[in-house]
Length: 369
Image (cartoon, rainbow, N blue to C red; front, side):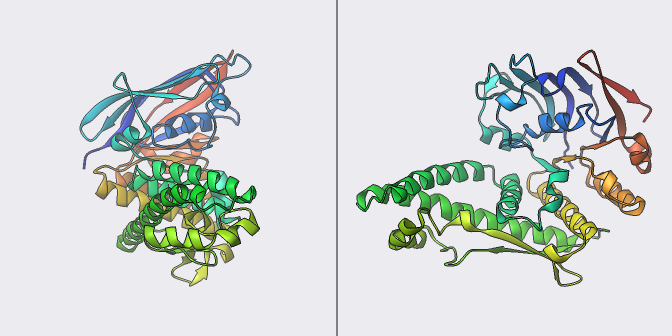
């Protein structure tokens, strides 16, 4: 199978890194070092290589190194589907980040055509027990990995909904003010819904085909009261007929922004929210692995995987099983931990980089593979 991997990554004034250069091959990468060394910041830089706002959903200004606040730059040499691309991200003085691919200005959609990045970070551990917003973002990240245009549809939908909500709060009753906004919301909303349904089908299929040490989940897209109309025309009609109700609430009460993702531990028939902490983590890992397998089939190469502190939350057997899964997939997984011993089960299948900082400059020490 064709591979997708970063060969070189350079950070300049990005988060805690005044300057850092990492040169690696296509194998998994184990980053280890003390807390505060900047390991997660490296993963965040890599997450920019996919459409969206990155794993922290941070603004360009938030990513700049303090106290200098000079702006930042991230560059990488990305091997993708038998091609090699020079990719650069840059922000100056708090301005929005700019993207260039092979020295030409590029869009988020361009990034989606040449690469895929998935991640699992500790903040996701409470996914199943917190509010629907987090699960919806998680679902949309997975959906975006299959359909790069999903990001643009989501942004257009949210923009139109904000304008409609403003009219509702201002008690505007003239239907002509709503018509164009509701057409845009209906068209993009139906596309968002269809993309999510297709993504869940891909994930379910990839789980069902797998022989894995991690439990599988039965997934379902659920809606708030009123449901989600299947077609753009039906959603447009529902928005029009619901104006009075929405005006009373001061917001739009129907549409894909009201969706939630439900997961059930398949072998036990137990909702994910009622599972143990360990089972909830294992279900998350299972979904990331399923997403990766499905992408390897549809995109033509497994995605870059960013697994922040994942080893610390697994026992030795399950940790070894995760490493076996990653290596069998053929993905370049970037994994972080405080010590090299967390990656001992990988043996020579991975490369190990120790991250430290001296006088504000990041030190990257390669250990024997």
